[in-house]
Amino acid sequence: MYLDLPKPFMILAPMDDVTDSVFRRVVIKAQAPDLCFTEFVNVDGLQSPGRQKLLKKLYFTPEEQPLIAQVWGKDPDNFYKTSKEIVGGTIAKEMGLPRGVNFAGVDLNMGCPQKTEVSSGTCAALMNDRPLAHEIIEATKKGLGGELLLSVKTRIGFNTVDLSWIEFLLKHQLSMLTLHGRTRKEKSAVLADWEVIGEARKLRDKISPDTLIVGNGDVRDKQHGLELAARYNLDGIMIGRGIFSDLYAFADNSPWQELEFEKRIELFKTHVELFASTWQNNERPIHTLNKFCKIYISNFEGAKELREKFMSAKSAQELIKIIDFALEGQIA
Ligand SMILES: Cc1cc2nc3c(=O)[nH]c(=O)nc-3n(C[C@H](O)[C@H](O)[C@H](O)COP(=O)(O)O)c2cc1C
Image (cartoon, rainbow, N blue to C red; front, side):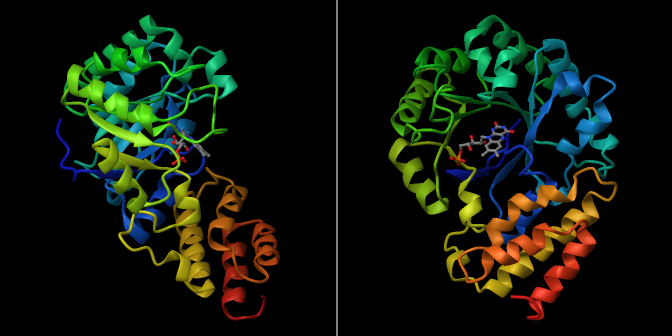
């Protein structure tokens, strides 16, 4: 499958419990990236009685397209079943999406360094279990039947930089390979190594010229991403935490730093309203909004106190009332 993307294209990174449908729409309203990913979703859970609970992680609205579903897990058969259900539109239908609205592809998470995932032999642990990594890729490929993009997001090694892992992945002729320029061991403790990402792009040229190479790690905004893409001749750039310090990180000229605090509070209100209308049955508890407060409410006098007031709300409706009070100048 072919996606019509500019070169270089910009992606909003998958961030668990952060980049759900609501936050993706907030970012898109500010300035849309070219492509989004869902949070990572466990295929073994999706193919179990716990499926309904996990579907909220895949939920999206048509305006979030193009969107890649990111999955992880252990059992190749569950990767096959899930990717087949994605291609066939079963999952989109279960989530109540209109006919014809679907994911653009499936990404396999082979980079998450967290203890729980690694000790269960999934995500970054697949770097050390290449027979299983191979089976998972082949099972997903079979499920997708060439209809949607097959992508992998990974790191540049387990304990040390390991180009053999990147070569191994490239031999699978993926549609896209995203490299976060740190090893599993480094977690996020050191700066991302873009030289290795550049080396990976050279390997791509030799092994699998049609695979799109995406660089990821410490990119501040689009301008910074464009510089890195040009320096290392990459197809795409993925931005994660950069969005926390600039909601307009995907804009050519971000207005964020100059935005008045009332405007920022209004944006937060839009976020809360989207949250309330999307998660009507408490699929996501109100306190999950707390982590977003700092994005909007910072860098002005009294910001900390205002954040505390916002974070004391027990429901989205109560939070909207407090925001309205703040906008009317009744609290500051
Ligand atoms: C809170 C949080 C959650 C994350 N969840 C995921 C995830 O679900 N899947 C994934 O592939 N990476 C996940 N990541 C890693 C990011 O996608 C990205 O690779 C990493 O943050 C480095 O990029 P950055 O420096 O632009 O943030 C997460 C990162 C953060 C900070």
